[in-house]
Image (cartoon, rainbow, N blue to C red; front, side, top):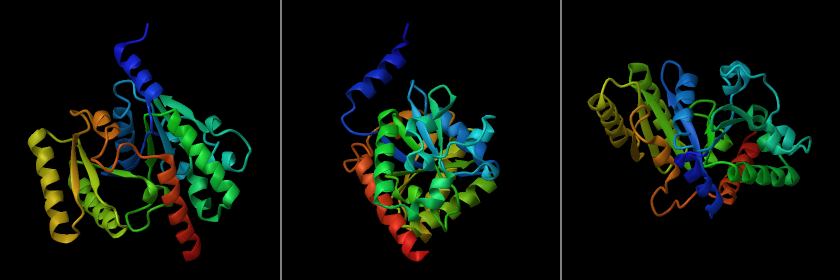
Length: 261
C-alpha cells in the first residue's frame, strides 16, 4: 500500500503542468562529494524523485563511484543515438537517479543541431520523470560548465567550517562574475541554528561588500525541508524551470564556449 507521501508525489507528477525545476548544485567543504550526496538524498524527502546530471568523472569524484556502481553509460551515448536516455538513469538510492554526463560536458560546445535536438528531447524526458533535475556541477567558480550556467536555480551548500566558508566565498565570487541573478544557500554540519544563521549572515555580508550577489536562505540540510523549498516556485519569475528555457541558455553558453575554444 502506498504511503500518503508516495501518493502525493505521484499526484504531483501526474498533474504537473510544467517541467520540473533545474538546479545546479555547488558544495563547499572538506568533503564536497559527501556534502553533495547528503544534499541530494535530502532533496528526495516526501517521496520526491530527483534525477542528477553528474558532471564528475570517476577520477573527479563521481556519484556512481561513491555508491559503488560501475562507471559507464554517459549521456553522450544517447545524444549519439546509441541508446535511449532513460537507459543512462541509475537508481543509487530510494528516489535518487544518477545520469553520468562528464563526457557530455566536454562535448557540448561541439554538438550540432541534430545532437542538440536529442539533448533537448533527453532533458525533457528526464524532467518528466523527476520532481527535480539537479546538476552536480564540476569545475571551479572561475570556469562554470554550460550546464551549470544554464540552470535556472543555483544552490550552494556550505559546510559549517572554515574550509566551507572560504570555499563558499570563492563560489560566490565566481557565480557573480558569471552573471548569476541570485544564489540559494543551505548550511550543513552546524552545531545549532545560531551557528548556521551566523555563517549565512557572514556570507551575506561578504556579498554585500564585495560582489552584490543576492543570497536566499534555504536553512539547514539536516533540520529544514530543503526538498520543499527547492521544488516550490522561486518568486514570480519561476513557476517551474522549463526544459525549453534551460536548453535555450545551454545553446547560448555552449555556442560561446565553441567560439572561445
